[in-house]
Length: 129
Image 1 (cartoon, rainbow, N blue to C red):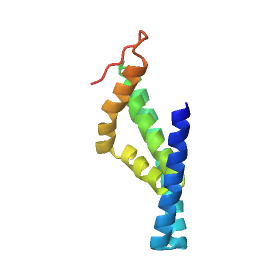
Image 2 (image 1 turned 180 degrees about the vertical axis):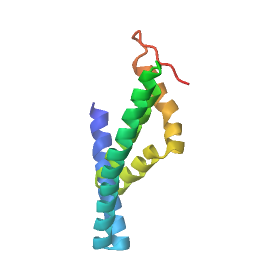
Image 3 (image 1 turned 180 degrees about the horizontal axis):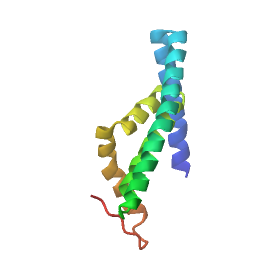
Image 4 (image 1 turned 135 degrees about the vertical axis):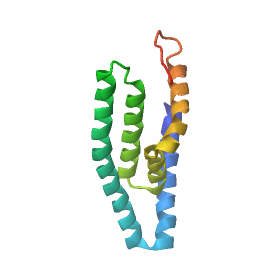
């Protein structure tokens, strides 16, 4: 828990530093407009992709399939959109990576590996396709 707190503080400090650097490079007003634009984009994508993800989960269940992959996709898109809503350029970069299907596919094995590690002592089975 302590490590998570340290990572959070370091991330916030890095976000502040990035905003200051971009503010010095572009100016205050364009930097604020860019931060607002990415937040608006995040809200739009959260609404649009969220409903699409819900339909995909329902489609998986209707076909008699486990919605694991669809849930993983929905979760990653949700996290990506929320990161876009948060003010900061580093969170925007990570959010865009989570929203892009190519890079999202690169994150999936890491998330499955993390889940397997967390659930190793339990009787939970995770199927990866």
